[in-house]
Length: 206
Length: 161
Image (cartoon, rainbow over all chains, first blue to last red; front, side):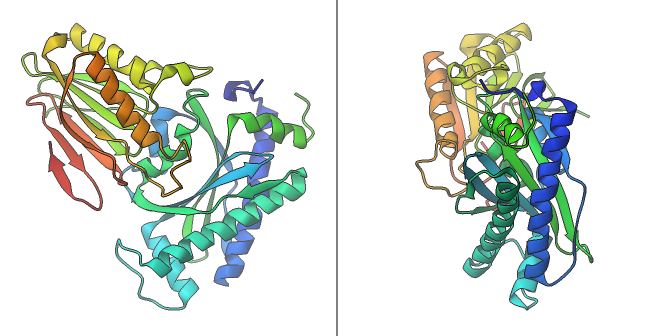
């Protein structure tokens, strides 16, 4: 029997938050290495959201963002969503490629694959921290990129929850480099079936 | 100033002339708009999934096409609409990420479109215009004054259907 979101206790939510801390901490370290710059991370937030509020997690649902989505497979299932504002996506590409020309709405093929690869590296380091800590086998799927309205992108992982309940749990980490050029959000969205697995692996008796 | 009533994800609302309804950043979900042009009553439901029978646990009727559409018609009738005068316009059902087609969740846009059409057909409600599928997010505004539906996208401009 899966645990419903409403059944999660405060201390269990704190533990899930800690997962966000460890996973995202590792991912941010990987990003800092990749960009050879300092990257700061905020304290993770756990958001249990009604569906109606999901498109507005980042404020304006119509804001144009780059979303990189990966599935989690193995002992834990769910999604990882990495969101960059458009300017941040361009800044990231410029740093990665050592040039200063990426701009506008369109991304060329190389830029798209640079963004996907960044998603891959971040998700890989996030999950490897989790795997090690929890002693669970978790692997990310191939990343997919979508550049569009924030609301439309944020709704994709939520739909997977639609048949389980009316709310969804997002573990959110914000990060940015020292100059605020490259900033974004990292969301871990475990499937409902994975809550129990997660808490068990952490030694929480349920 | 006319009111623009916001409809969230898995949410619905009804507007009487001259108010309008809007939903922002629609992806794979469906923005179904129903209209009675005589009573000038407009309804909008933001459908996430096709059928409630596949659902477990908590339940919100606006989330599913099969429970959301009849409930929206009920609400419109309470505001003076008559069912056999109602017609439909729909938008959404996009595939936002390019995953392989065998992934169920990614295919949800298409399934939502198909289920919504089937349910409207069974309810004898005619679809007079649609802008569905593709891979872009949409913001829609539905006007109760004339039943026009404005669709805004980032890459493909703005149109009215």
